[in-house]
Length: 600
Image 1: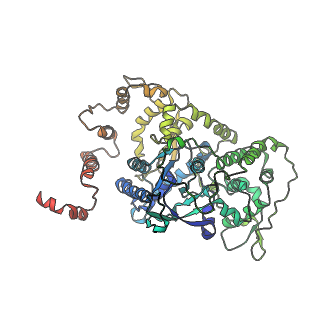
Image 2: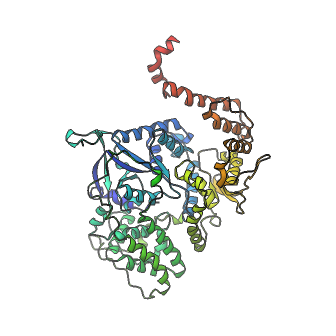
Image 3: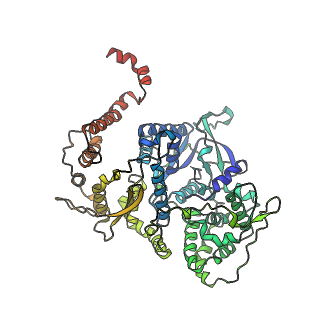
């Protein structure tokens, strides 16, 4: 999600907010999406040509082996589907990715995440038997709840974790070179002989630096600064009355200090009253509902994924960094905050029209000068270029959005238990949640020739079968978001509910159907007629996909060269690499197998 400017704010005063720590012999929660993306960046793999998944898998494997060498037990949590309230951000980011891809040039270090990056990441986790799970929606709240439950830190690169009352390790502070522990540092009950240098953050370091800001105010700070769910521009009238000091730091950094300074002199209830009281009446209901949702997330204490993360070895200790907050002390005022938010919308209609002026006497620059918020540069993503299609995306009325938000939990409950269970185990892609809850599918942007149709159009028949199986005979057609030329566009997909000889079973009954029938459904939807019994079982899906691709490929037309290339990849990855190891460099191969090759 991310709080505007908070990462830079903390980094600018790193010595004040971050404490050095020797990480070893403990559990640690990993933000799967964040870690996968950053590892791909660190691997320096050329992304202009997609893939290089074997190199990425090797890099991911090495990363986790370093953690395991230090007896660090990783538990990985991934994001799930998109929430309705985040859709405008989703559309905006897809457009931005298309703009970035259009300008991609291999020699200039362009960064584009390949299509199966997260899939490869998960396969390595499975290979190394590292526990992982997938949230129903965004992972931040769930990670925080798990961190409180397991009493362990979160490794990520997301400014939201500067607000949650958990121990947070910013990923860039983690040194991946294991350091030997001195004999005096060794715990006789621990197998760990190495540690990793890192820096840990706890909210106490932030609130103490501002003279004891009440911890319950931090979620409100995040809301006022803006994130993916609520833009700072919503609080325009608040900022017009907030005095922001002049100084050498950026306007955003000074704004953060000013907001914190103002919050120090308020209670949670008085702050909410003053902020909401300055909003136009028709915007208050929407703002308070968003505030409620965000604050509830920051103080959430219960997890739905803990049962999906298997127990860790007994010798792994509870993380205990400097100034860590005990589970019992965490968010003492959380229930008061939630009660205030829950009851606030009932009295908002009767709010006093005479509003108290917002005073800020604590954040004046050294020369005593002050400046109004109108002087600050705009950093709010709410004004991004929209490609002229604002009538299509992101313009839903607040009432519609609120109704959708309230329906999400109900709709999750309507997903068949077997499917939801597999989704939470991370066995199915998060797009399944988008299809079932939002009735939308988002084609991931990738590097390709924008003068041709999207390369993913070839899979439309497969997707239509998936939609028909998941939604049954639903009145609402699926909205399919995809590239049209170099711009984002959408059209509807007609689901397939049956083939010439088969009717699809209801989604809730899929596991009751024989495996033979399930395979038949797949083959008939793909229109592939082949006897797979002569092939190794692990090749079956690959061969079906290959035949489907060759039959339906028309831009360009498939040739024998395409077929030979794919077969050689299959042989290399599934046979050669398994027998002699991964060798992509002629010199290293010759060095290891020179004598053998000469004998042959």
